[in-house]
Picture 1 (cartoon, rainbow, N blue to C red):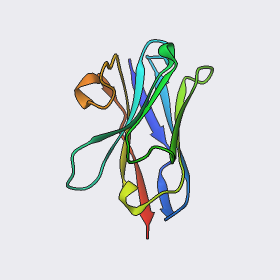
Picture 2: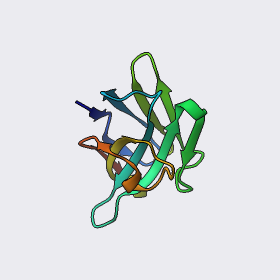
Picture 3: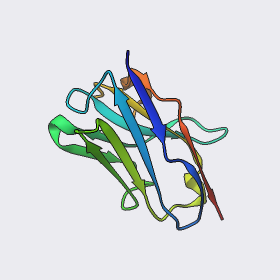
Picture 4: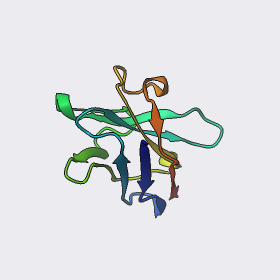
Amino acid sequence: EVQLVESGGGLVQTGGSLRLSCALSGVTLADSVIGWFRQAPGKEREGVSAINSPHGSTYYADAVKGRFTISGDSAKNTVHLQMNSLKPEDTAVYYCAAGHALAWSLTDEYNYWGQGTEVTVSS
């Protein structure tokens, strides 16, 4: 059974930092692209970042480049998303997903999803 469990969300002030984690079971960093997505109220789910460990590649949405960093811990089968310089517009539920994504930012490219963790950035 595949499970993805996110953690690390919370309430933070503008300019603050949070570190999200996605614990994987049933899939590994070696065989899947792991993506982070977010969905704000009333908006569509959008791709934030992804890591393709076999290719040694990471990807970021323009809105988070330079502020967010994705990393993988193969020993713990966990993916982290370090979020710095947070803005109110980063407020959303953040989801991690796993799949053999060729286009990292498209939700249809992912087969498995976590339950989400909520991030709120106050102004």
